Length: 369
Image (cartoon, rainbow, N blue to C red; front, side):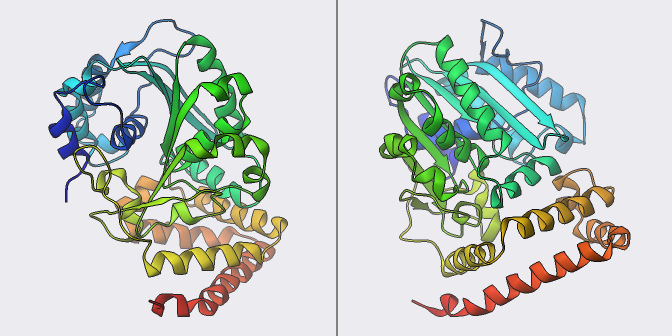
């Protein structure tokens, strides 16, 4: 069971001219996009870039200065080891990072972050960050259930056009989770001049789209360049319609933990593929799509707003607090329910009952070969 850490070790001495960029490299780029480069990587308005090696050295000092509260700086437990590995790799250390943006707006309900990476084969990669630990980030994801377009998707198009105008040559775009969704959306809705320069679009366990997006001309113009991957027990990647065929990847984890790119299994120059998603993932896919399909947009919106309100009233600050202590977090959430009005409680109750009904109707999926 080899991970991206093994790949960095295997391919660490080969630059991108000696061994061309492959899906594992872009998976690593997608993981890099989660790192907090605020004040380290130049913004789109700055002409200069910074080497990945130097950016990581500065970030390491920033992390070390926070001592034991690493989670307030980094998003994943594996990040410190990842930073060390990537910094010592000749393949990645000389990549140039530039164009970093990180926008979180609770009022507009937008969480958007991206950066560009230049490698020595003459191409540029636009990498979109997935959902961070903030509640507003997760809220924006859930808004996809009733909104044809979310703010981050519009920001992704503007960012792609802006960065494409600042560089020459081929473009690759992609990302993990919501980042993959943003990459496909940006490629579908950018101008034709930019669209023609895109040679690859990488999507790692990303949620899908409304049918209006995947039936549009922009999507059909780029769909042959989309490389979509999901783990065997995918949860996020089976939400909404994809409009393309995906490839299933083996993971060293189980259940929802397979969403982490750190768990995906790799070879010397590719991902390790599985036959199909698990029965549990197929069950969730059918159940969630049927559940969402049985609720009108107003009901979906009211339910999501209710859950978001409860989380904000609970005094919890981020997903990390829930991950850190389920028992304490659950207690805070239950306590906040007393402040919710009766109509909102009924919406929550009705929605959960509908979910259970959808699950019961699809139970046979768990037992089909």
